[in-house]
Image 1 (cartoon, rainbow, N blue to C red):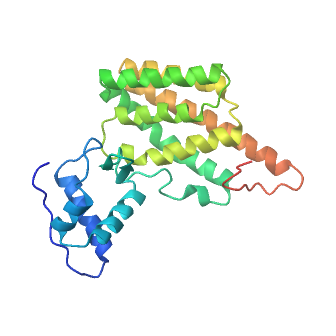
Image 2: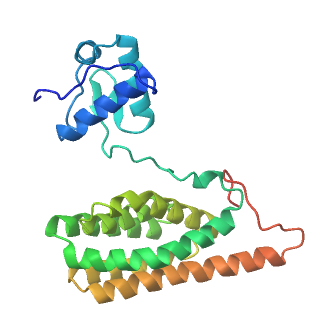
Image 3: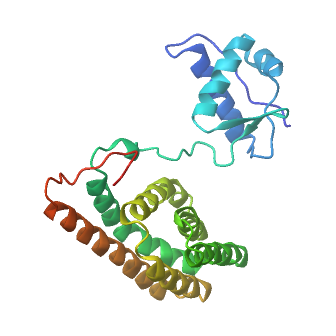
Length: 252
């Protein structure tokens, strides 16, 4: 590892643990560390930062909670695969009305993902396309085997987002991820065949570099989702005693 750009920690308004976490984060950025890199030992960090080992331990805990670091048993502390990314950064799971949230997420997806699909078609390289083909195939296998396809569906859309090679788009992935998972849960996977056909169309459009076609295919895919959600909400509203609300843990 190159010489670390550490600063001796001084007491400021923030806690020592917080300042320690900041310095470790600075190291990660400046040294371009990845998930392949192991963090210096607790003892080494304590000496570099001029703080106690307990403070280093607390700083590391803060970064683990933020998904910047991960502790691998028997190996040490490493940089996380996607530093700073957490599954639900906006706290969607705590919204009391998950049906309303699902509709609002579909609205956002309708504006965002068609553009993402266009950019994916225009920028994807062969490695991206190989990953996308495998993701599409996995969704198909899950659907045809009548397995829960929510996770593989998420991976397919995430793969499209990564094809854009835009530094900001991957940061929006948790929004897409939660939206897809919630939709599949609420609708009980009713659009299985439509999903299969739409994904094939998206894959073909992106593989051939046809941005306009990819954009239209994604817009159509999300419109199917919106229409089904609207129908579901209408039926629930017509049900006697229904409030149309749902709990985060049990959407329906």
